[in-house]
Length: 430
Image (cartoon, rainbow, N blue to C red; front, side):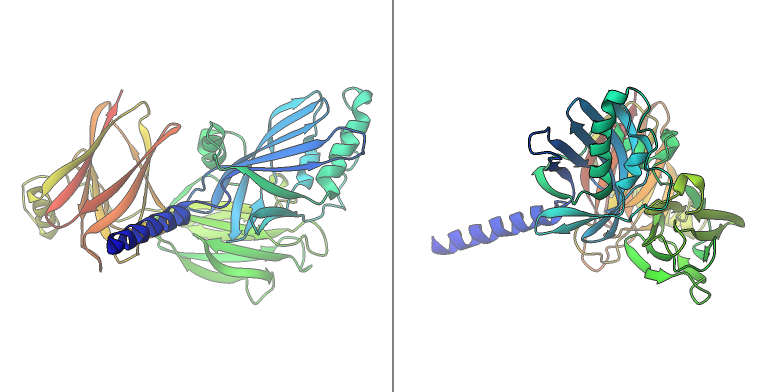
C-alpha cells in the first residue's frame, strides 16, 4: 500500500510539473493603480496579455480608467529575455472617451521586467520630442486637469503590476496584432517575407551618425548579439534560417546621444533588399521591430500515388503502405489555415512530411521545441492532412504537438507516427 501511495504521489508531482512548465508566466491579466491626489479618483490600468506566438510575440490590450475617462488599446509585446518583454510603440485605441490621449501613449514604452511574480515598468525616456503639450487643450478644456494627471502617470509614474487572473487575451485583437496582413494597423511586425535562401547576409547601420545607439537582435529566441553599440566592427554578419517561420526581433536598447535610436537592419532575401528601420516615421521612438521571414521547406509537386518511378516516389509508395490512423475531423469556416508544430518533450531529431489532398506541402520538416508554422489553403469540402514520419529520432516514436489555427479558433493534438503508422486529420471547409 505504501509503495502504491509513493507511485501515485510521484505521478501527481510529475503532472504538476508538466502543467507548470507549460504555463506562460506572462499570459493573463495584470493590474496597477495610482492616486494623484489623496481625495481624488484612482487611476487604474489593466494589462491583458495573450498567449505568445512562437514564445516570442505577445498580443495584449491595455484598459486605462480615471474618473470619467476610459481607454482601451491594442499593443504588441516582444520577448527580449526570459524576464523581460519589450513594449511596442503603437497602441491602437479601441475606445477613448470622453477625450483622446493620442501620442502620449508613446510614453508607456521600454520593457516590462518580471521578478518575484510581479512585473515592473522600465521606461526609455522620451524627453527631447515635442509631444508634451500635444492635444492638451483639444476637445473640452474642462478635461485639462484629468489629461495632465494621465499624462504624468504615463510619463513618470513608477509602475508595478500584480497578476489578478490567468485568462489570456482571447478576442479578435489577437489576430489583428499578430497577423498584419489581416489588418491595416501597424504594431511593429513587418509583413511576412518568404525566403528560398537558407543563409541571409545581414547588415546593421546607424542612419544618423555613430552616437552610441545600442541594439539587440534575436532570432527565434536566440540572441545574435546583445546590447551592442552600432559601429564598423559589427556591421555585417550572416544568419542561417530555420525551416519554417523565423522571427527576428530588433530591439533599441537606448536612444543614443541624438535621440531617437536610428538603427537599421538590412538583409537581402532572394536578391531583394529589405530594411527594418528605426528611423522610419512609424518607428520613431519604438522599442523594437519584428521581421517575419518564412523559409520554405523542401517541397514537391509530386502527388501521392502507387506509381514508383524514382527514389522519391519509392518513399511515397512506402508511406501509402503504412496504416493511417484518423486523429480528428474538424469543420472550419475559413480556407486559410495555420499549422503550428513543435516537440513538447526532447528535441531528438524527429522529422516529418506533410501532404494536403495528396500533394506534398512539406518534406523533411524538422520538429523542434520552438513552434514552427506551416500555412495551407483549403479547397471547398473535405480536405485530408496526412502526417508521415521520415524517421524515429533518437527517442521513438516520432512525436509532435500540432495546433491548428482557423479564424479565431484553435485545436491542439498530439501526433504520434512511426514507420508503420501515419496520422490523418480531415478539415471540412463549409
